[in-house]
Length: 334
Length: 110
Image (cartoon, rainbow over all chains, first blue to last red):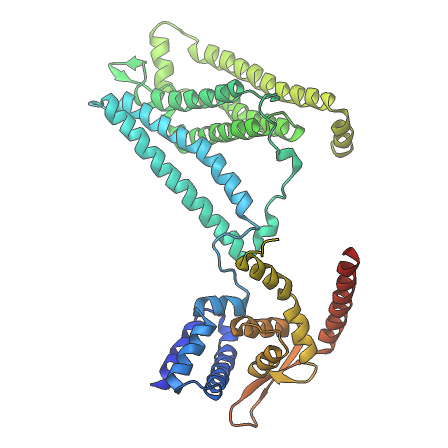
């Protein structure tokens, strides 16, 4: 029986190292343990079994020893990835969780037949908890993979631009941020609502405003852009001021929303045919044409205004900081 | 003056000694030796190292090309003998120079 503990220890250690190193490690570890046991016996250990046990205790947890042999980390997330992990989790928890809860609560309130305030709130809380669990789990999983594959170098480096503005000197107020999030929430709710509880009826049937076939194409895109907009709002809030990079991101998000919407409107693919027919039945002969043009024009105006607003604010912020401006001018075109 | 907390002192001593193990291995293994013998030699020289630190370290230095390794099967128990490689010798010299300049720098500070 004296060899069995050693055998088990060597096997337990070898299991956690690469195939290529395994045979060599087993051989060396076995010789080492025998040397150490002999050393203990020479130093006065009462018998071989006691010495063997002491040696294995000294060598410690096989998983730890194997990790140390193969240079693998003994942690899930190391210092190289922890700050990025923490920043992303905080950001997503602050955006996705309330958004998911709001969507659930509204959908229940609008669609459920026998919902009370209690069940609506309970639904919101349940969804928030599940969303939080999902966010933490999936983000952590991705970062563990990054840690194990040695891809930590591909994470964006920390940049002084990420420093939040101290409270009180903020150029981006809580009101701005809240407004962005509310617009997004209202937009998401409106899209859900027009599908499931449209106010427009034709022949007694409720007809959705938007073409239902878009649910498998552009509606998810638009919802995704809105979600990104909410995330952007939080990033902007944490930064506390408009930088050129944020202004560019803002313009991109605006375009990601406006371009598909305008193209769909002008090619008459955005609105549900049934909905248009209901309007025509009601006496508005050119409903589709009129709606397409006015809505498209509104979207273009609002989008361009939103994009330009960000750029103007970034420029103003730059003008307030001449030193930083000189630095930026060297890096940015225009 | 109160005596420093034992644990704090032990922690700092461990930090200070960590890098010197590599130095000691590369210096000692200019003569070929196997793991357990090295453990004993270092222990006798007052540089006691944990076994579960030393063996993985030897493997790492071998992977880095600073140690050459060879199995000796002539004796009753086959053992893996390590020896400082040419590259290991260059690293050892650099480490020793740095060690000495650190030592004199710290001395000059006070």
